Image 1 (spheres, rainbow, N blue to C red):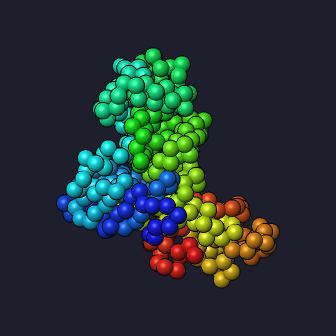
Image 2: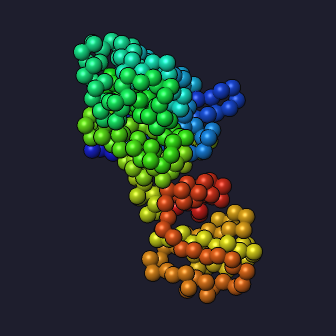
Image 3: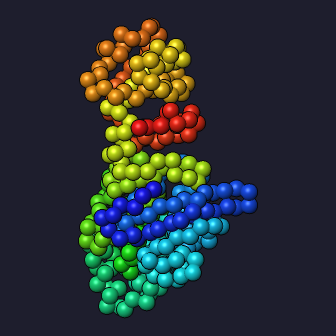
Length: 317
């Protein structure tokens, strides 16, 4: 994965590897992330996303390879790395018996911030995340979205250069998820923080500058979300059929590689002028439903995984 040249590196990894006995969780990852970039790690559970974040944040020592975060080596200068990063992982770091303000004050003390700085930044972050009126309320009384917002505020109180987020919106409803993304965008625009996140909600990753899809500890695709989606083609054709193999065979000469899952067949359609009526004429009976839609990141993920199983011919081009 090549480094964009527009800004200096915030993260640089070389052959980063983690093994647990005979199991290889992350395999020789080599990548760079520029300062101020919003970078997403996407993939199934067990694909290596969280392990990668744990190594970059010095929580897990690599088995092999190296990485530098904010200019510091994650092994030889782990303490320096920790001074320059913020962490928001799936398990909340908040003390629910304390108020929002008390949680931030405690976090600031851990980073040796002065009382004045803690107060000023706490006020700014509580206002940014819409929690000013809840500053004295116990976190135990907060909704899931409010707790997640306070987790992020806690993670950036010390003004880190790099913020690691592991599934920041998991378990939240759509409204709260959108609010979290708005907060993150404001943090980036106001403080030029580099953000690296994992997420299961692939539609959210369209806001990232770049994304990398992981499988079995390796990158299987990386790039700007809009470029990856455009690389699939103009449309995705979905067919629900009693005879998926037959309909896949009928359309392969016209459309190329197909994905068959149960009763469904999926094709990539390159022609911007394609329409459902013309495609349906190519098919015989037993079609229950046929739809033509624009591709998205979920389709990129499906086709990249299909390519890993089917070989290079199936790769999105």
